[in-house]
Image (cartoon, rainbow, N blue to C red; front, side, top):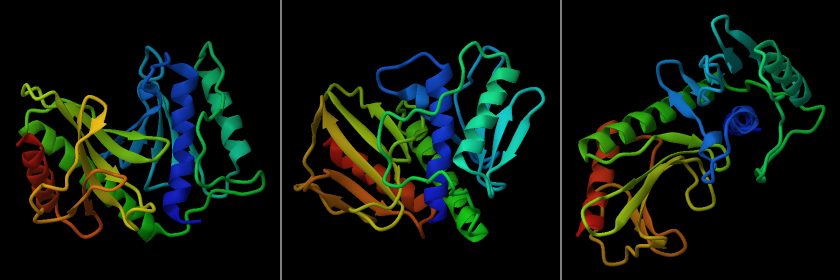
Amino acid sequence: MKMIQHFHLASQYLSTAGKSFLAHKEDDSHTNMKFSPAEKSLLTWPLDDTGTQLALNYETFSLVWKTTTPQFLSLKGTTHEEVVAWLKKMAKSSKFTQPYEYKLHYKLPYSMGNEDTFELNSEDEAQELIRIRTLAQNILTTFLETENLKSDVRVWPHHFDTGAFAHLHDGSGKSIGLGLAIPDDMVDDFYFYISGYRGNTGLRTWAFPPLTYGKWHNNGFKGGVLSASEITEEIGLQFFREALGAYKK
């Protein structure tokens, strides 16, 4: 199993912590996460009034129950059942009124058996995942700020994308969804994406001018995509700026 798959599976503990302890939101945003470049970690929303969070540290491949006295669980060689038992214990020790429950409401493309353990197969691969997530966080945050667009930048547990969504507020009724996706059937690489909408309808791209970096798709997914592995922050920003310009015309 690739490291991205191990991290995707491990992120479900953060998602289910949000589901266990936070008020339900229709858009499922209580289950999403933030990537912190400084901590090299995924973080839940605060899970209680004291600011307790659950983190997944990419560098140490461990879970961190973040309180005034943080508790750590290395995932290396650990089974799913052991992680669930630890999280139940952490919730109880923090005097949470609700128990932790691991219950997904969607299907993932891979899973672990009862005897399978998490492994840190490649530290180089883990470092590349940190680099890619940091790049995405920096590009999206900078782009939204410079274009005066308002959105949280969050990692969504189902597709494991770093995503944002913003209304243009220019009288057009348009909005954009953008982010970083993990490799899939459309692109065999991490890739940046942007798509435009008017209401719930995706905007067609067939008449848009070519992008300097990346390309437009108009079949199935309607929007722009750019492979992320070997790009700089400036190239990523140019991709999003050009694409936004096309949607604004």
